[in-house]
Image 1 (cartoon, rainbow, N blue to C red):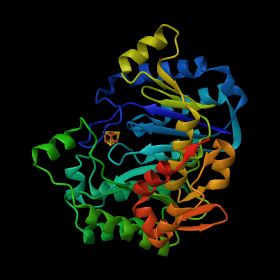
Image 2 (cartoon, rainbow, N blue to C red):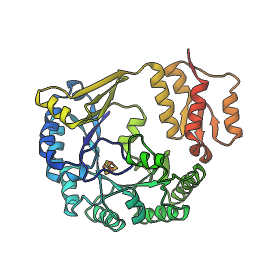
Image 3 (spheres, rainbow, N blue to C red):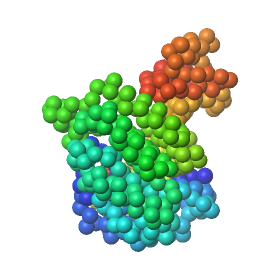
Length: 378
Ligand code: SF4
């Protein structure tokens, strides 16, 4: 089983916090789609032996592409790859780019899941993030998706904004739940290098909330969403039962994926490779009949183990039996770390399986470092 990720590198306007590759010049859309279809045709034949169970249009802003263009790309994928009987096919939607009738057309083209970049239901937050939409457009986009027949809707939210109080965040989370989305992603605002936001923070014109407030916001989301029937299946992701994002879960379970489009990454059999980030280089390579490869790396067993520990803990669980069998990891026989983490109420432990407690999720990164420092490969 494998997944396909398609990076659509266009946005109407860059947001101040974003470091994903995208350009504001939408005039290259048609040329890009033609090149993407050539890239699909050029893809290595080994992928034809995989059953593709998820397809994900991310970006950038995939919803700047008309349903016709998305349908053309999907058709090319179906022609080239072996697609499972009921694949999960997701498109990221940005409120402010979408015309209501697009939803029905996306459905007809084979999309069956939408991930809507709501980010907040407060205009003040959206303006701070320099999003192109307002709160009322976010609301209408969710309602339009539902009315059009989508029964798998995910909503993205961001917390720890300088414009937010804890009470604001509580209100945003409650508002999100009122739409009964099947899935909610709640991300902590990250200050990425080389973004306008990082320059604002460095110059002191913006102050990011203290860790303590961020942790309170995280804890509130976790508690409230679980009370409302959502399963916390990854640090930043919650879903109704059986509605987890299959595509993202497959990344976290180290399943193979093929990335298409500028800057897209791929992974298979411990090999990771990535496409040119710049759209000019990407288009030039395809025009010359070449796969637009920019670089690759072969993961050592140590690197693979580190990633598996990180991914597993982000999903709230660490399976020592699996790690010991796969990587021949040596663990401290006295299990001092396990005992310390249990005493601090970060984990529960039984039969070789570590489970993060609510408190453990808050300190997931720290716990991951402590586990990684305690392992050695035999
Ligand atoms: S719309 Fe999304 S991809 Fe585009 S700049 Fe904003 S955050 Fe980045």
